[in-house]
View (cartoon, rainbow, N blue to C red):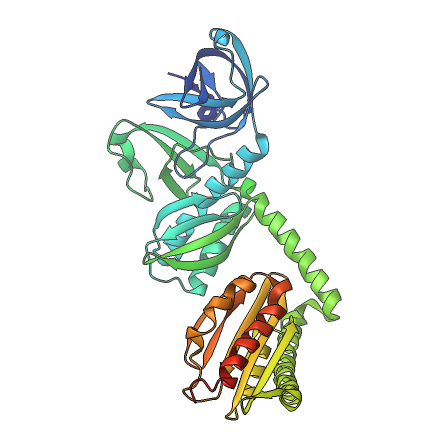
Length: 408
């Protein structure tokens, strides 16, 4: 069985080993060594990455009881029996060690602050999350847990490892029930937390630097807490300080007034948007009135045809509604944009001219599609270059039917 150096000395990140096996499985090259510093993952902690010789270790895991290293590019099978130098990605290892030890500390703090047991853990690349067996967590409980956890970090308590038989587990006030067989590895944060864990941890709590809960959410009847810990928390704090300073300069106010200033600007923006909308709809109505005044009359009906460029769906609808607000009118309105066009055809002629029975044969002119019933149809088209021709064709066909007295 591979000697697990990562348990003997988690700080050791370079080693020499003998290659026991090089095997191709499922299109991947798996390498088995007599000893390794590469942690294969477990307990929510991701596996190590790094190098074996010049080959990248992209995954470390188990095959049965054996540890295998998946490498790219593949090693030559003739490397079996030779020596190879391994090096673990130090920043990745350090990050996840900080996350894992920090999780032990904060899980115990949540138990003490609010009797909130941790039921699952995920160490992501940006956040560490823990799920708690609770339907809700109040802010004060979370604050107390944070204060307690950061107090343990400030005291720089030792992280102590105990290798015991499972029959000895009762000696420790374990936070969760351990497996009921074989040897156990108990990770203790000195006189604060005890948990059976096969993960790789920092040597003392001070290396975790800082623990901060940044968000909570309800999921599957539990509470998920998002945490920033270790150097991640320091980097996140730096980003937020820089953001606050930038916002303070942009908003010309002190950092403590940023939220008030943003609310003020948002209120102003909403009022401006309302006023702009009112003005746009008034403009659409005015443009419709102008189009009506200059429109041709066919068979006693006023026919309005208008093509807009990037006016917007709301403007288009307002224009159409203004035209057909009075009986005896037909309108064809199109709005062209970069990806095609929107169109509406409508009339206020009562039961005359069933548009769904008239317009579909014209769709191929501009790659149009649409639907509706009776006196109104609308849709979209792909060929903005043919939109005007499409509008003209609709007007011509409706005019022909009106002159023929169809539906009168």
